[in-house]
Length: 153
Figure 1 (cartoon, rainbow, N blue to C red):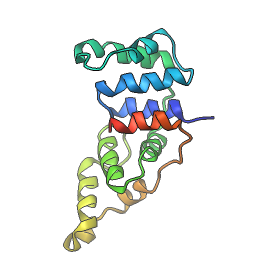
Figure 2: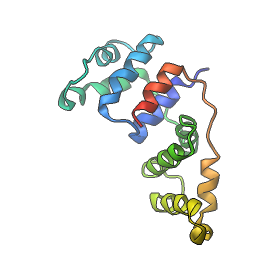
Figure 3: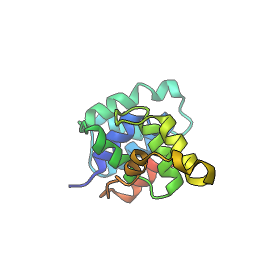
Figure 4: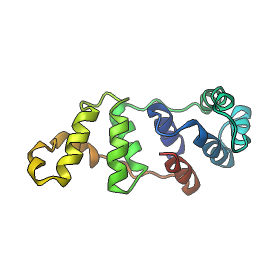
């Protein structure tokens, strides 16, 4: 089973991309055979559409997909599985911990990220944060959908 809808669910739940990225994501999902009229309407939105026009389209399109509600630890692994670059992984982790109850907060992530580059602060690196960074899932995603999702990060 592909991870397309799992990835979209996590990106939506954690607010990882802005409204302006959703039409491109919707277009890829429609191309993969997902959704119905609301998703197709979102996919057809022209570039430059105002946020006030986009805002009501996104929730209805996402509702139409029947996205899975992943447990926080699985959602974190999916979010981290979207990106390969270590700096992007730190950024995604910092945003995800604001939304998901996973036992650490943004401050712990920021301190650990700083400790990676600062020899004086190495002892402040949080082992739980390091473990979270290593907990990503290998995702079976359509390459176009992955690009649409990560372009908005």
